[in-house]
Image 1 (tube, rainbow, N blue to C red):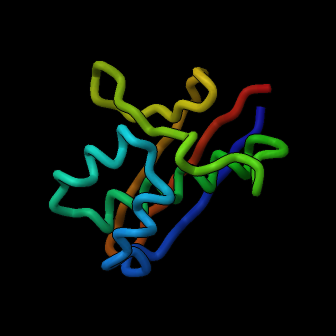
Image 2 (cartoon, helix red, strand yellow):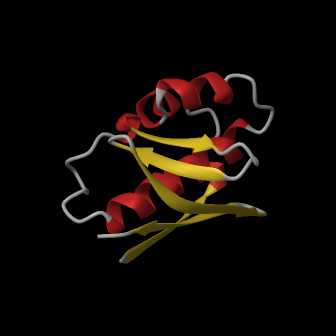
Length: 106
């Protein structure tokens, strides 16, 4: 098992519409368009995807962010999906920061 963690500064994402299109999957972008807190949403997704790539061996630089998606379980909890597999993810926001942890089982 491997854990990945990442923290990001939310203000980095203000006014970054083009970046959102490069980071978010199609499903995530549809949610993003209707969110009031767009910067917080994209920052959390970015942190989760970076955390996943750190834990997923050979992931950095080889997997496109748009091929990774954070979806919601029936109970509302997020789960990270890549290559039709699901990985535990936790995303948190506080003030100007978003942090995410992802568990990748070998």
